Length: 237
Image (cartoon, rainbow, N blue to C red; front, side, top):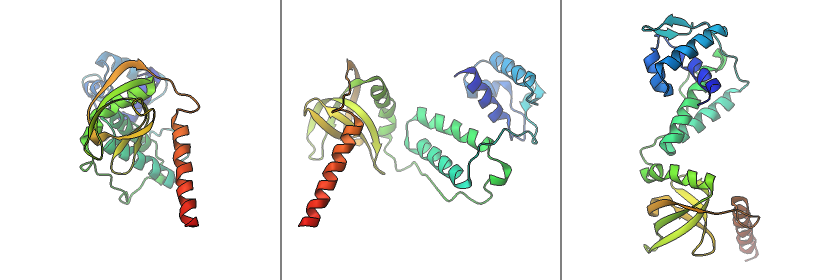
């Protein structure tokens, strides 16, 4: 984590608390040493942030201290918070942790007149989500970002098992299941692989490249064209 980001997150953690938070707790939360926390606290104080407290007791920001608010409407804030909750509930542990951190930052900078006093109308439960996705998501994201071929053991809708080498292009959530959109080397074409049907998954050292005729935008264009074609035929018939 870069120092500037860590300092901002430190201010976010201190703001709005009733009780002081110790350097030990801060160091565990930010995954740095206590010595680093002490240096960061000193740097923030020297920059004009009115942090109160001392080593061994804890630190706190006075309730009147305000971080410059972002110019969000109530609905925009609601959308951001809903998105954060969805990521926390439906993604892997790494993204969930980042989403929770982002959520705290948003809460910390909401102007008082925009803060919601009524219950948030959305609930995002996670108990119905297949945990297989959480186990595989980080590997799949890495493969997509670094253009690594994945080797999977897959059971299709007919219960047939096959070993595939795929070039992952994107992860798509259909409201109940996560799917990998990939170029299948066996079929030499785009295929969709439901994560809950993957038996084993391994990232390989083999690399792949995208092109004008092999990328997620091209795939989506083909899907749209096919849907338009079916709709046109239905109207004709």
